[in-house]
Length: 158
Image 1 (cartoon, one colour):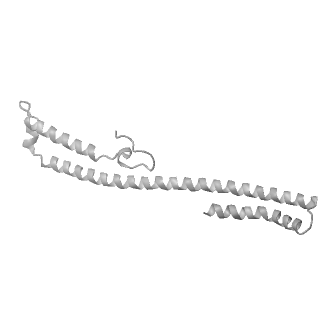
Image 2 (cartoon, rainbow, N blue to C red):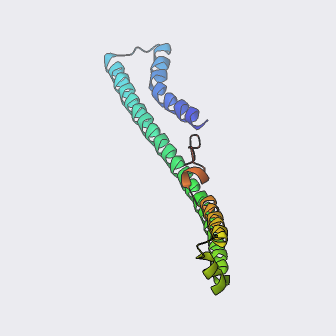
Image 3 (cartoon, rainbow, N blue to C red):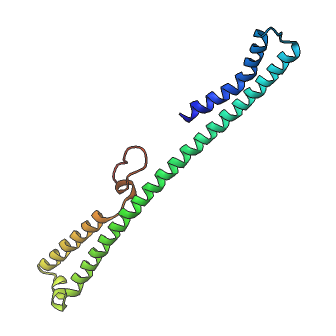
């Protein structure tokens, strides 16, 4: 809407001298070569002004597009930070659970873990360790997977 108003006002500025010349000719006056040259010079000047305004408008539109893109990137970064903070909190809780589980391990369990004949308790410990490892992997933050990019389709998970 604004472009049309600017275009119409510039068009009016360009056509105003020509309209005056036509009014003079219709009133019985003739356009002399000097007046014609003045009209041509005025039209050239207005055409140059119009070209400059168009270039400035294109430059401003490019700046607006760049600002919108930057705003989208900032918003995507903020979302990624929130997701990372949540994942970090969950990882911290899991780490506390691992430490608590380790602290519960007494001398008897440590000896049973090293028992070479059956190794049953060692298998339970390795299963528990694998479970913790799987939870850590699931809670890890991968920006390409967890954060939604500002533009384009979501990339594949690692």
